[in-house]
Length: 169
Image (cartoon, rainbow, N blue to C red; front, side, top):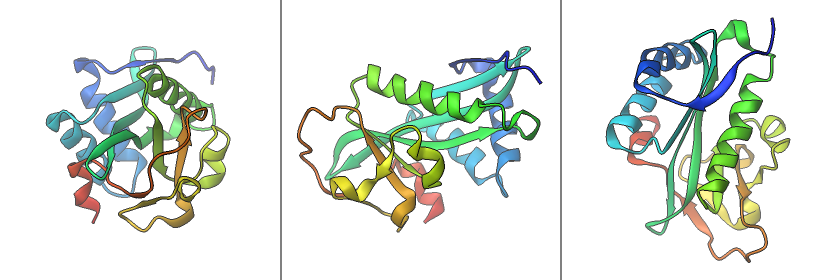
């Protein structure tokens, strides 16, 4: 397969394709429902798609995360790629584009609950480095990237995701 896909912001015509890709990428449709709920609530702040031949083959979403009721950055979740398009760098390009989008919008941190070996290649480190913990007990899977490392960190505590994530509690 070629790597002739593009990464861009979602548009209304992509919503059904996003739902299909996300639902097929996880054991249940919970993550697809999460994306829909975040979008409806206005909390899907960044939503990027990988598109090939006019068809959505991947998606990544970002929503605000807070610490002590202050938005400190964005939470990356979920990232999904259709099965036949995996191992082509689609997820990596979505993560890179999303983190750059967050940086461009002057967000301080991006956090993720995910596989450390995958996210480390983008600069994510255990969130505990900054004194962060997550409300889900993610341990080493809870990671962060500091998008303004020249500024001294000024926060520590429990990072909270958008209310839609409560479906996973």
